[in-house]
Amino acid sequence: MEKPPVDPQNPWLALRNLTPARIALGRTGTSLPTRAQLDFQFAHAQARDAVHLPFDHAGLAGQLNGRGRDSLLLHSAASDRHSYLQRPDLGRRLSEPSAQALREYAGAHPGGVDLAIVVADGLSALAVHRHTVPFLTRLEEQMSADGWSCAPVILVEQGRVAIGDEIGQLLGAKMVVMLIGERPGLSSPDSLGLYFTYNPKVGLTDAYRNCISNVRLEGLSYGMAAHRLLYLMREACRRQLSGVNLKDEAQVQTLESEDGTDMKSNFLLDPPPA
Image (cartoon, rainbow, N blue to C red; front, side, top):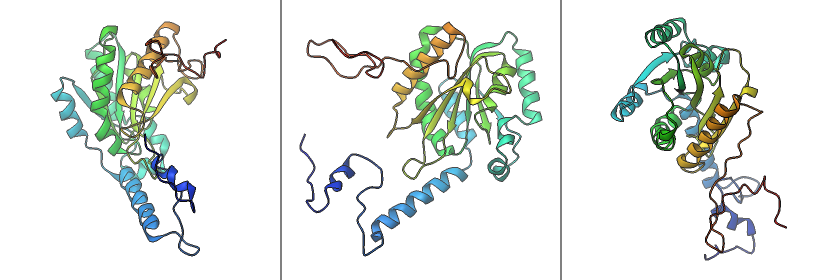
């Protein structure tokens, strides 16, 4: 691969081809150049727009239905976006009408399920719109052999991570996976987060959850995120726990060794060769 040209006056410029981070921006006197300042303002506007973008649950439900997946629409106790942003606690619990609707659904479908998938707008509905269906497609492809029973996909307006625990408990789910829009960064307004909990119930802390972050085209790929999530789910079923006591030790294919065999080890966990 041909190396990018390096400006002898500013060797940092070569690194700009390798990262979206704001480095080697240059200067005009004691200020940023106009282009760098405008790029920053544009990125900031994208992040703000992602936070306030309304959740297109109808469009998402239509996409899921087109792939043969049913969905249920619920709402958190936060009545609107302003309440959601000002009162995080309201986003962690269902509104009473939604909780009652879910109780009625669970009563009509007794016995519980192995897996509940919850999709909430979080702090970036943009991330949910872009990545939910492609990710779920890859996840379902990889978990088809496990035979887990699944509830309809639960769509939640104004939801935060912990609301998945209440949903999982009401459904009698063994596991819950929450797909939620993460807080936008200045280079990632559409980052999707995955939160997994085994034996969900109201009152659990983050210590009982496993998180897979930055699922998007420029970050963690759908296939890799699904691979890592399935490892956690299978290990959780085997060990009956999740969270800080369940480490992500999924083996992933990296490079091919000289003899043609796949190297699937985790270099952070494996001892150095003798």
